[in-house]
Image (tube, rainbow, N blue to C red; front, top):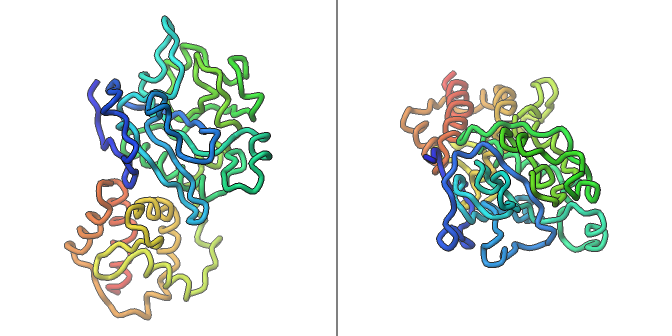
Length: 311
């Protein structure tokens, strides 16, 4: 099957790349399956024999997810059970993502203060980072930002009779985002009761408040505007981590529109400068390998700031 769209998630490391060893089936992806690793570090996946397409490793100090890609987005990976004579699982148009951490409350308790994420109570920054990936999948691969209503908590999510497991025909016809706990022929219960409603709201951008709901001081508005965009057409990475610039932008993009609407007073004190077409093009190309985000930044930020600065 012909693959379309970018096959690498921008910023993801390929230091643990397994496609060369295990090949895989080309697919036109319309499903993302979320897993939890039930560990606190990047797994070796038996040398890649049980690897997903991507692994998200929490960096708790930096409050971001460090992404590792093991297979192309639209090449089958190996993290699901696929029974002989049944329906296809790994090869049925699915991109698989492992989230380092646990969905098991007993494991969470046992780990105590050791750094980790208990995904049913994931911090908002982790959901924002995961939502940025899902939004990218939506833009680049038309992944529906929707999924099952039931995400039972572990351990009730374990087993084939967990009340949320799909039947063969449901799985075959499914498009969107689900968990390992939903996949036919499997019995795992991860990622448990992840806050799916919040995750989808973030991916859809519905958490951007209306203008009157935000009351930022003028000094903070100007500071944020200068962090996001400089007048010479250079994207500023607020995290100081060039390898993950796209993550910072993706996480901030949903709020940029609100910030722009409230910068008029601060911008009025700045010199009148109009961004040229060349500078706007530079902004777009700065988001390397991600045309959708480049367009979003260029159209929703650069143009609007240019208009205000030209007044």
